Image 1 (cartoon, rainbow, N blue to C red):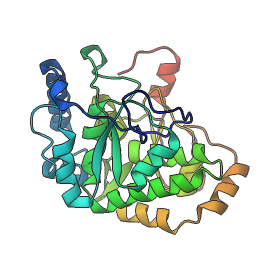
Image 2: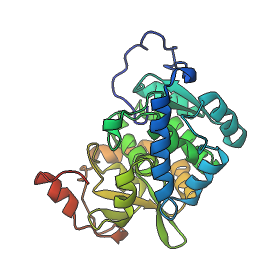
Image 3: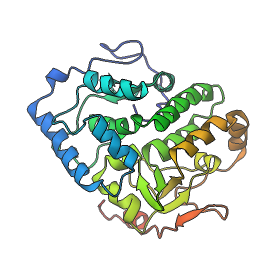
Image 4: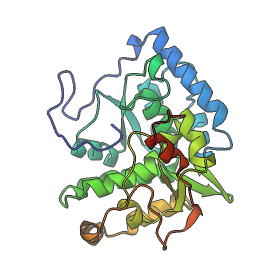
Length: 294
Protein backbone atom coordinates (compact mmCIF):
# COMPACT_ATOMS: atom_id res chain seq x y z
CA UNK A 1 0.00 0.00 0.00
CA UNK A 2 1.43 3.40 0.89
CA UNK A 3 4.05 2.49 3.46
CA UNK A 4 6.34 -0.54 3.30
CA UNK A 5 5.07 -3.42 5.41
CA UNK A 6 7.59 -5.42 7.44
CA UNK A 7 5.68 -8.72 7.11
CA UNK A 8 6.01 -10.70 3.87
CA UNK A 9 3.22 -13.30 3.72
CA UNK A 10 2.09 -15.05 0.57
CA UNK A 11 -0.50 -13.21 -1.56
CA UNK A 12 -4.07 -13.88 -0.42
CA UNK A 13 -6.45 -15.98 -2.52
CA UNK A 14 -7.40 -14.20 -5.73
CA UNK A 15 -4.26 -12.05 -5.84
CA UNK A 16 -1.48 -12.47 -8.38
CA UNK A 17 2.10 -13.18 -7.37
CA UNK A 18 2.80 -9.43 -7.32
CA UNK A 19 -0.21 -8.90 -5.03
CA UNK A 20 -2.37 -7.22 -7.65
CA UNK A 21 -6.09 -7.94 -7.93
CA UNK A 22 -8.81 -6.80 -10.35
CA UNK A 23 -10.32 -3.49 -9.31
CA UNK A 24 -13.77 -4.81 -10.30
CA UNK A 25 -15.02 -1.26 -10.86
CA UNK A 26 -18.51 -2.45 -11.84
CA UNK A 27 -19.07 -3.82 -8.32
CA UNK A 28 -18.94 -0.42 -6.60
CA UNK A 29 -22.30 0.62 -5.18
CA UNK A 30 -24.00 3.97 -5.63
CA UNK A 31 -23.24 4.68 -1.97
CA UNK A 32 -19.54 4.02 -2.50
CA UNK A 33 -19.42 6.33 -5.52
CA UNK A 34 -21.31 8.94 -3.48
CA UNK A 35 -18.70 8.70 -0.71
CA UNK A 36 -15.94 9.43 -3.24
CA UNK A 37 -17.88 12.42 -4.56
CA UNK A 38 -18.42 13.78 -1.04
CA UNK A 39 -14.75 13.45 -0.17
CA UNK A 40 -13.66 14.89 -3.50
CA UNK A 41 -15.96 17.90 -3.30
CA UNK A 42 -14.87 19.03 0.15
CA UNK A 43 -11.14 18.61 -0.62
CA UNK A 44 -11.44 20.32 -4.01
CA UNK A 45 -13.06 23.34 -2.34
CA UNK A 46 -10.34 23.84 0.24
CA UNK A 47 -7.12 22.91 -1.60
CA UNK A 48 -6.72 25.88 -4.00
CA UNK A 49 -4.25 28.23 -2.34
CA UNK A 50 -3.06 25.43 -0.06
CA UNK A 51 -1.97 22.64 -2.41
CA UNK A 52 1.01 22.79 -4.72
CA UNK A 53 0.11 23.75 -8.30
CA UNK A 54 1.64 20.43 -9.39
CA UNK A 55 -1.02 18.56 -7.40
CA UNK A 56 -3.88 20.71 -8.71
CA UNK A 57 -2.63 20.34 -12.28
CA UNK A 58 -2.57 16.57 -11.79
CA UNK A 59 -6.19 16.57 -10.67
CA UNK A 60 -7.07 18.46 -13.83
CA UNK A 61 -5.10 16.55 -16.47
CA UNK A 62 -6.14 13.18 -15.04
CA UNK A 63 -9.80 14.29 -14.98
CA UNK A 64 -10.27 13.09 -11.42
CA UNK A 65 -13.19 15.46 -10.96
CA UNK A 66 -15.34 13.07 -13.03
CA UNK A 67 -18.09 11.77 -10.69
CA UNK A 68 -17.55 8.45 -8.95
CA UNK A 69 -14.58 6.29 -8.05
CA UNK A 70 -12.11 6.32 -10.96
CA UNK A 71 -11.74 3.25 -13.14
CA UNK A 72 -8.06 2.28 -12.75
CA UNK A 73 -7.79 1.16 -16.38
CA UNK A 74 -9.01 4.50 -17.70
CA UNK A 75 -6.92 6.41 -15.18
CA UNK A 76 -3.81 4.41 -16.04
CA UNK A 77 -4.28 5.11 -19.74
CA UNK A 78 -4.22 8.86 -19.12
CA UNK A 79 -1.39 8.67 -16.58
CA UNK A 80 0.80 6.42 -18.73
CA UNK A 81 0.66 8.89 -21.60
CA UNK A 82 2.00 11.59 -19.26
CA UNK A 83 4.71 9.87 -17.21
CA UNK A 84 4.66 6.13 -17.92
CA UNK A 85 2.98 5.22 -14.61
CA UNK A 86 0.01 2.91 -14.07
CA UNK A 87 -2.36 2.35 -11.13
CA UNK A 88 -3.17 -1.20 -10.02
CA UNK A 89 -5.42 -2.55 -7.29
CA UNK A 90 -4.14 -4.54 -4.30
CA UNK A 91 -6.05 -6.20 -1.43
CA UNK A 92 -4.23 -4.38 1.39
CA UNK A 93 -0.77 -3.61 2.66
CA UNK A 94 1.88 -5.00 0.32
CA UNK A 95 5.15 -6.59 1.53
CA UNK A 96 8.25 -4.42 1.31
CA UNK A 97 9.95 -6.01 -1.67
CA UNK A 98 6.76 -6.07 -3.76
CA UNK A 99 5.95 -2.49 -2.78
CA UNK A 100 9.38 -1.25 -3.85
CA UNK A 101 9.38 -3.32 -7.03
CA UNK A 102 6.07 -1.83 -8.12
CA UNK A 103 7.39 1.69 -7.61
CA UNK A 104 10.64 0.87 -9.40
CA UNK A 105 8.54 -0.35 -12.35
CA UNK A 106 6.41 2.83 -12.30
CA UNK A 107 3.35 1.04 -10.95
CA UNK A 108 1.40 2.56 -8.08
CA UNK A 109 -0.54 0.12 -5.89
CA UNK A 110 -3.89 1.31 -4.56
CA UNK A 111 -6.54 -0.18 -2.34
CA UNK A 112 -9.88 -0.68 -4.06
CA UNK A 113 -12.16 -0.24 -1.01
CA UNK A 114 -13.53 3.10 0.14
CA UNK A 115 -14.22 4.24 3.69
CA UNK A 116 -17.66 4.10 5.29
CA UNK A 117 -19.57 7.26 6.32
CA UNK A 118 -18.52 6.88 9.97
CA UNK A 119 -14.87 6.83 8.82
CA UNK A 120 -15.11 9.96 6.70
CA UNK A 121 -12.51 11.89 8.70
CA UNK A 122 -10.12 9.10 9.67
CA UNK A 123 -9.33 5.48 8.98
CA UNK A 124 -6.12 3.63 9.75
CA UNK A 125 -5.65 1.72 6.49
CA UNK A 126 -5.47 3.87 3.34
CA UNK A 127 -8.48 3.54 1.05
CA UNK A 128 -9.00 4.30 -2.62
CA UNK A 129 -9.61 7.98 -1.91
CA UNK A 130 -6.32 8.40 -0.08
CA UNK A 131 -4.42 6.35 -2.63
CA UNK A 132 -5.88 7.78 -5.82
CA UNK A 133 -6.89 11.33 -4.89
CA UNK A 134 -3.91 11.76 -2.56
CA UNK A 135 -1.10 10.13 -4.55
CA UNK A 136 -1.90 9.85 -8.23
CA UNK A 137 -2.09 13.56 -9.18
CA UNK A 138 1.58 14.02 -8.24
CA UNK A 139 2.50 11.07 -10.47
CA UNK A 140 1.40 13.21 -13.42
CA UNK A 141 4.32 15.54 -12.63
CA UNK A 142 7.38 14.20 -14.52
CA UNK A 143 9.92 15.16 -11.85
CA UNK A 144 7.95 13.75 -8.93
CA UNK A 145 7.16 10.65 -10.97
CA UNK A 146 10.92 10.12 -11.37
CA UNK A 147 11.41 10.61 -7.63
CA UNK A 148 8.89 7.90 -6.87
CA UNK A 149 10.63 5.48 -9.21
CA UNK A 150 14.01 6.36 -7.66
CA UNK A 151 12.53 5.73 -4.21
CA UNK A 152 11.38 2.28 -5.28
CA UNK A 153 14.79 1.43 -6.72
CA UNK A 154 16.44 2.68 -3.54
CA UNK A 155 14.01 0.67 -1.46
CA UNK A 156 15.03 -2.56 -3.16
CA UNK A 157 18.69 -1.76 -2.43
CA UNK A 158 17.90 -0.81 1.19
CA UNK A 159 16.71 -4.31 2.04
CA UNK A 160 20.29 -5.58 2.11
CA UNK A 161 21.29 -2.92 4.64
CA UNK A 162 18.53 -3.46 7.18
CA UNK A 163 17.61 0.22 6.95
CA UNK A 164 13.92 -0.01 6.15
CA UNK A 165 12.90 2.10 9.15
CA UNK A 166 15.09 4.99 8.07
CA UNK A 167 13.99 4.82 4.45
CA UNK A 168 10.33 4.66 5.46
CA UNK A 169 10.79 8.00 7.20
CA UNK A 170 11.85 9.56 3.91
CA UNK A 171 8.64 8.33 2.26
CA UNK A 172 6.57 9.51 5.20
CA UNK A 173 7.96 13.04 5.32
CA UNK A 174 7.93 13.58 1.54
CA UNK A 175 5.39 11.42 -0.30
CA UNK A 176 2.89 11.32 2.55
CA UNK A 177 3.39 14.51 4.57
CA UNK A 178 5.62 16.80 2.55
CA UNK A 179 5.48 20.57 2.15
CA UNK A 180 7.11 22.56 -0.66
CA UNK A 181 8.18 26.20 -0.77
CA UNK A 182 6.83 27.84 -3.94
CA UNK A 183 6.80 31.57 -4.69
CA UNK A 184 7.83 32.32 -1.12
CA UNK A 185 4.83 30.43 0.30
CA UNK A 186 4.46 26.96 1.79
CA UNK A 187 2.21 24.54 -0.07
CA UNK A 188 1.15 20.96 0.62
CA UNK A 189 1.86 18.05 -1.72
CA UNK A 190 2.00 14.97 0.54
CA UNK A 191 -0.86 12.53 0.00
CA UNK A 192 -1.61 12.17 3.69
CA UNK A 193 -2.23 15.90 3.89
CA UNK A 194 -4.06 16.65 0.65
CA UNK A 195 -6.51 13.79 1.27
CA UNK A 196 -7.26 14.91 4.85
CA UNK A 197 -9.77 17.70 5.47
CA UNK A 198 -8.33 18.53 8.88
CA UNK A 199 -4.64 18.17 8.16
CA UNK A 200 -4.82 20.23 4.95
CA UNK A 201 -5.43 23.23 7.18
CA UNK A 202 -3.38 22.12 10.18
CA UNK A 203 -0.17 21.51 8.23
CA UNK A 204 -0.08 25.07 6.88
CA UNK A 205 -2.04 27.24 9.28
CA UNK A 206 -1.86 25.86 12.82
CA UNK A 207 0.72 27.21 15.27
CA UNK A 208 1.38 23.75 16.73
CA UNK A 209 3.76 21.93 14.32
CA UNK A 210 7.35 22.69 13.40
CA UNK A 211 8.01 23.41 9.73
CA UNK A 212 11.65 22.69 8.96
CA UNK A 213 13.75 22.81 5.81
CA UNK A 214 14.35 19.41 4.22
CA UNK A 215 17.64 17.67 4.90
CA UNK A 216 17.87 14.05 3.79
CA UNK A 217 19.85 12.67 6.73
CA UNK A 218 17.89 14.72 9.26
CA UNK A 219 14.59 13.41 7.89
CA UNK A 220 15.76 9.81 7.98
CA UNK A 221 16.62 10.15 11.69
CA UNK A 222 13.21 11.54 12.65
CA UNK A 223 10.34 9.49 14.09
CA UNK A 224 6.80 10.22 12.94
CA UNK A 225 3.21 9.97 14.12
CA UNK A 226 0.99 7.32 12.56
CA UNK A 227 -2.07 8.02 14.70
CA UNK A 228 -2.50 11.80 14.55
CA UNK A 229 -1.40 15.02 12.89
CA UNK A 230 2.35 15.42 12.53
CA UNK A 231 4.38 17.42 15.03
CA UNK A 232 6.94 18.32 12.35
CA UNK A 233 6.67 18.86 8.60
CA UNK A 234 9.69 19.08 6.32
CA UNK A 235 9.78 21.63 3.51
CA UNK A 236 11.49 20.93 0.18
CA UNK A 237 12.71 23.76 -2.07
CA UNK A 238 11.46 22.06 -5.23
CA UNK A 239 10.69 18.65 -6.67
CA UNK A 240 13.82 18.95 -8.80
CA UNK A 241 15.93 19.45 -5.67
CA UNK A 242 14.28 16.49 -3.94
CA UNK A 243 15.02 14.24 -6.92
CA UNK A 244 18.59 15.52 -7.25
CA UNK A 245 19.39 14.89 -3.59
CA UNK A 246 17.97 11.39 -3.82
CA UNK A 247 19.88 10.48 -6.98
CA UNK A 248 23.18 12.02 -5.89
CA UNK A 249 23.28 10.47 -2.42
CA UNK A 250 25.37 7.35 -1.79
CA UNK A 251 22.99 5.61 0.59
CA UNK A 252 25.36 2.86 1.78
CA UNK A 253 27.55 5.17 3.95
CA UNK A 254 24.42 7.14 4.89
CA UNK A 255 22.81 3.99 6.26
CA UNK A 256 26.00 3.26 8.20
CA UNK A 257 25.90 6.72 9.80
CA UNK A 258 22.21 6.40 10.57
CA UNK A 259 22.81 3.07 12.31
CA UNK A 260 25.14 4.85 14.74
CA UNK A 261 23.03 8.00 15.13
CA UNK A 262 20.36 8.56 17.75
CA UNK A 263 16.78 8.73 16.49
CA UNK A 264 15.15 12.13 16.78
CA UNK A 265 11.76 12.68 18.39
CA UNK A 266 8.75 13.82 16.40
CA UNK A 267 9.02 17.36 17.78
CA UNK A 268 12.83 17.77 17.80
CA UNK A 269 14.39 21.01 16.59
CA UNK A 270 18.16 21.10 16.05
CA UNK A 271 20.50 24.11 16.01
CA UNK A 272 21.40 23.18 12.43
CA UNK A 273 17.77 23.19 11.23
CA UNK A 274 16.36 25.76 8.84
CA UNK A 275 13.23 26.62 10.79
CA UNK A 276 10.31 28.15 8.90
CA UNK A 277 7.98 27.77 11.88
CA UNK A 278 8.92 26.89 15.44
CA UNK A 279 5.77 25.18 16.58
CA UNK A 280 4.29 25.62 20.04
CA UNK A 281 3.14 21.94 20.04
CA UNK A 282 -0.13 23.03 21.64
CA UNK A 283 -2.16 20.49 19.67
CA UNK A 284 0.13 17.60 20.62
CA UNK A 285 -0.03 18.60 24.29
CA UNK A 286 -3.83 18.84 24.18
CA UNK A 287 -4.04 15.36 22.70
CA UNK A 288 -1.88 13.97 25.48
CA UNK A 289 -4.30 15.59 27.91
CA UNK A 290 -7.19 13.78 26.26
CA UNK A 291 -8.70 16.47 24.04
CA UNK A 292 -10.59 15.15 20.98
CA UNK A 293 -9.05 15.43 17.50
CA UNK A 294 -10.07 18.50 15.50
